[in-house]
Image (tube, rainbow, N blue to C red):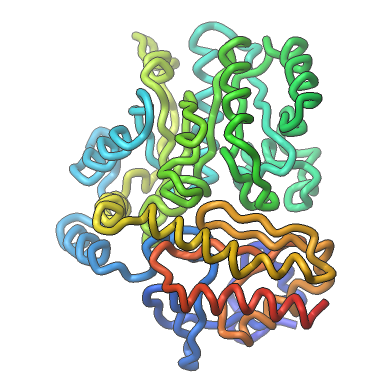
Length: 416
């Protein structure tokens, strides 16, 4: 049955025939969502991990307002503008090595599409038309567009309906044991001539299940990519901008990918924006006298001045407080307060890294009921599949965070 508020709306990841009545947000502030009826919810997931500094940060708002009056948008074909120039420079300075060629887009999925396209065309531009396959890993998630669905875990349920439509890629087990690493090397020995790139979410595979892996895995992949002449792509849409405790997750492994994708917290949770950043030699592979060697891609709203201004302001905010200490404090508090969940009978695992906490259950029989229970606790927590997770803003107060962790314990305890 459709709810009156959904007369003209089609929600994401939702069976519209039996979904919960949606709540209606009116305003936000800090880590609080204010509803139409005046109720307040503490946001435990920072609007899909975007609002890293909390909502309505005054510096970001001031910067965007100024840009709105000056120039809200201009096409990026043949014209550039200062907010994009500044943001590209800022990102290049923050990223390790020579990751300094920035291509802007409007969403994380598109940024990965662009990365895959760059990887394939890099080899095509060298007259190599057989290196066109991508290796990705079980448990990974990289977006909902056609090409990105092809590199997500085919068994996780979100995209398996399209298995006969999307292009076939190599989705294999993550080499997180010595035996799997041997299998991975054997796979590369057999297929490396057809592989354009390896794609991975470093340290934490996000929407595929919030699965953690060690920095050693990234070092192993870098070594094999170099040995077999394969590009390495890091999808840091979720892990970038401090979420795992370092500004970029790749820093914890001291590994530099050939291409990196960024979005989510890039604009501080205010505007749709993403970036695909490549090393110098990748960019050079597109330079020639032939137009066919150019990257023929151009989202209409790429490098939107408002979004770039928001991102520049968000990066400036990182310099205004000790975000690293904040993330460390959040990590310690979540470890202390969520450890008790391990004693609950339906809890399979509790894992925490940086400002990410995951309580994995053996099963969740009724997701809609669980979501409703959290709202009744005055918190905004969105469990999926068999996990309940937190990715709060870095500016959340200890009291707000305790409300979130206690709600998780109480709801799971009483529901199971």
